Length: 126
Image 1 (cartoon, rainbow, N blue to C red):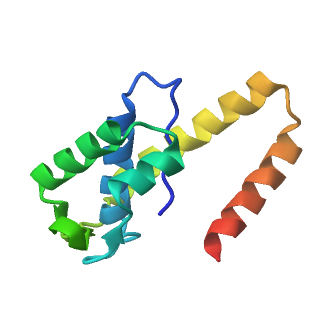
Image 2 (cartoon, one colour):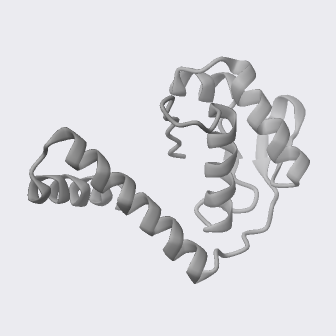
């Protein structure tokens, strides 16, 4: 499971986690009955406090997206509801815009940036 938290965003970290997990469930990346990492493990991986991840998990559980089964772990229970193509297209446009802004801010060559983006995408494809 790939989650990134950006502390420079105005969105709180717990909400970033919640939104990303919700998107992965809707896109079918996280299948029904997939086991999620423990709160402690995810907090450690992201460099966050356990309480931050716990809040995200509580909100996801309240939405019916996940279920905590005590010491057996936390599982996806929400059925994937595919993103509408317009919503997916909009999110992709936002991501591309954010990427372009960061490339310009870094003063990076656009061709180099695109090559690195392709390489990163290929790493996720495997």
